[in-house]
Length: 176
Image 1: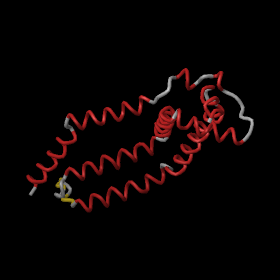
Image 2: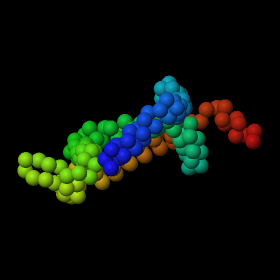
Image 3: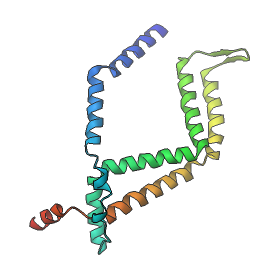
Image 4: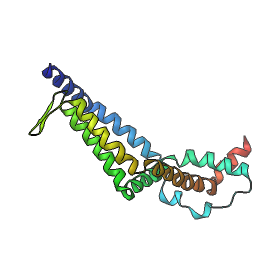
């Protein structure tokens, strides 16, 4: 039974590492970063201005969210990394749960035999939950997530609202 399970895992692993699968994933990443705008374009101070009315704010945000979507994704990713590095307990809890689930999964349903006794996988999962949940509440993930949402929203929407559309798009809109 374990031999069949190991063979199916090996087949699944080899499918994920096939050249075609790797190429398709690389092309998806390349196309996503292909729409990444240059730093000079993203931080072009000449295009910064105060919008005249709410309609212009909506128009700018709509255009810039689409135009700079990859740049905004990188900003949100950097803010996420920053929040984890400033909340080390939350980072520890995430790593602890991930490594705990990975370690229990490696047992393939067998008991863990230690000098202190034998533990079933259900006991290990229960122990993981009993340790991770209180630590998770101490790590304040909800306030961290709210900070991340707020900081990302202010940064992204602030940039999108203040950055004017390129002149070419203004003329395209008037002719339509």
